[in-house]
Image (cartoon, rainbow, N blue to C red; front, side, top):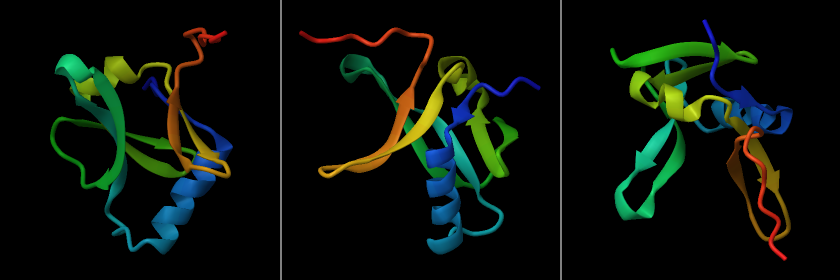
Length: 104
């Protein structure tokens, strides 16, 4: 089965750290999806959850992953990365197929 997303090594390490140290139940998966809509547009979501009937299940780098079937096409080609800087840290979603804008 085609896996729509990639998880970078930094994001993989952080996800596995969270799973091991933040009391995530063993039967939970990493849920990757979309939220929002309307004027604000769509945004991406990460969380931990139990599988539901409408989910597709994957294993990526040893991480059990859930993606709701209706979100599958929106996530195609996405790469999940983890950023850690002086001012902020967190997960980011990057689509390497879409060129980045370079503001001048």
